[in-house]
Image (cartoon, rainbow, N blue to C red; front, side, top):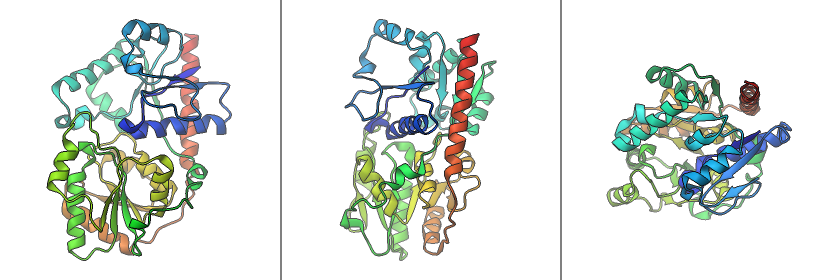
Length: 350
């Protein structure tokens, strides 16, 4: 059984980490003989990938048809209409909940992809219960459903806990870490304005940002933010896209992690923050409330309110963290994946 991964890299760093987690889980759960991951991306080959096809987005339909017809199972690319048996992955339904972030053409394309999955009776799997509920609200289907709530293996991250750190932001009072890519829905403008207010009111923590500066939907977004808000000074450190080891080093040494996005499917930032025991300042979105259920080190804020974010930032100073075993999150991820495998086997038999 082969699972086909989404394109990742700087364009969508979270996609890389989803596939890293799946590969790690296959090894830990000894499932390598049951399924393998096929990795498609347009950039350089990452280690531990079973197969890389360069420039997959440029393949014409005929080549795609030949490739996909031989894969058997296909997760989660929309072009999987060429595969005999397919899963269709819906990480989120941003186009339905924040349509202002999309062009009309992009909204039509996303709707068409979902309708195609329904028509072809693909097994549809979601990254959260919230996404499943939104899907059911807007679509009627008889498809089988699955759930895959991603996580990260704790010991994998801890390997980076002692990595050397850039002394520019090793401030004695610590720092907030805001690792979101510069996509418009990641909410940088309000978050940065909130941080400036926090500092003006006596806040001590620095702010470290990292992430790709490219937004394919809003190509001028980063430049527009740069022109209106100070992005780099003695207290704000804008690092750009970081290699994984550097990014995890910054994460481990942070006092608090910010995830103030306006929408997500299932946040890798939150998973990594929870596993590493960080204080999380998180948007009060339904999907984040679901993701952070049973967790204590979380401060929920209204992502559209500067005052709410500032209040959350000041709470970090006196916040008492609770140590909690995070392996249950990984166990749930493994269980979800095994259930998908069972659905796959059942589908192959029919």
